[in-house]
Image (cartoon, rainbow, N blue to C red):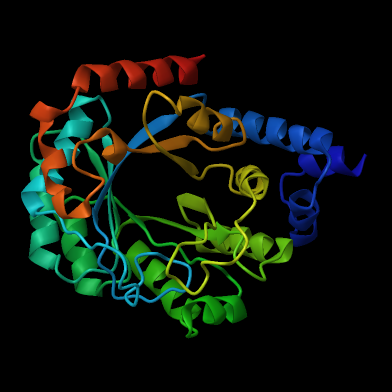
Length: 332
């Protein structure tokens, strides 16, 4: 009885959110996902948006304990794409019918204000494309310049709303500074997105509830949940992997709390894993963000990642068929 009443509440309390996140019975979880999917269809329509992800640099000035791109990971092969290569990849997405592009990198100051502005302007000038930036914490003047150049959204994950956990996983307490950046971005005219990592060491259901409520308080337009995956040659390489079902429940509960927000899920897109995206789209997510890198040549060696912008070497027709198959499913 309590589950049914909670699922039909319009304004969920922290206690309600924790209760839903702690559901263990497959039957109860199925009820949660069904309700979240219904709310998504009512608030966001049946449409699922496709976004193309361009990961153009794995250089990063941050030193997060869980991230393989952390500054002190000397085992990783670093790469940077040129501005023209980034533009070329974005145009590949456009040729596949994907009109939402996410430009993503670590905190890499090599890409300065002017270069990023040039990239944004060059992608937008001949097309009707929406650009989301995810470039870490930058300066206010940079945010303004990139907004003027044409970027509409900025994704800056807060990682965890628990200040103690934030300090533990980042070796310094900068959570409030990150929240200040999100508020700064909103003042600059961006639609803002944030989110957390699900399954971090020492994290609880109460922490995830606070993550969701922080997103509500900030009035964000996008909420992102990623699963904690231990990365080699990082301080957390031997930690336990985050639970996939916990991520699914977090997305579902977030949909009940943040009814109008965009909630993405991510896949590395190829013909073998279309179902990976499908299973996350029945729990409240309304965006499928696809990374085509694995479909493109020379990406196994990051030193040669640049040539994957060469459209002539890509079987675009096959990619279009695969994406059309997914679109058909999403429309059903």
